[in-house]
Amino acid sequence: MEEKNGRISFFDGGLLSYIGWSLLGGLVTIVTLGICYPWALCMLYGWKIDHTVVEGHRLHFSGSAIGLFGNWIKWLLLTIITLGIYSFWVFIKLEDWKVSHTSFID
Image (tube, rainbow, N blue to C red):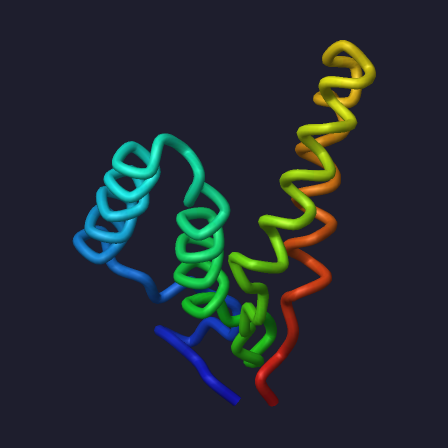
């Protein structure tokens, strides 16, 4: 069981790596005109989740940009068809997708 300073639930990511991953994700999103935004999200989700320990068990993110991209297109189409109403559900769908690709390593 992992512990940090006597705590069994903690986050062990660092500020500099977070800034680096965020800048890289933003740059990739801008350069590709938003097409690779799902890849940037997966990259950041992976970094955050892989640096999280809950009750001594490290979490792991297994989502892929390709898997998210398919959902992203579906959500975009539903948002267009419903004249923007579906956009209120996109955040919830994204969180559900993220959690469904999160598991304990041990």
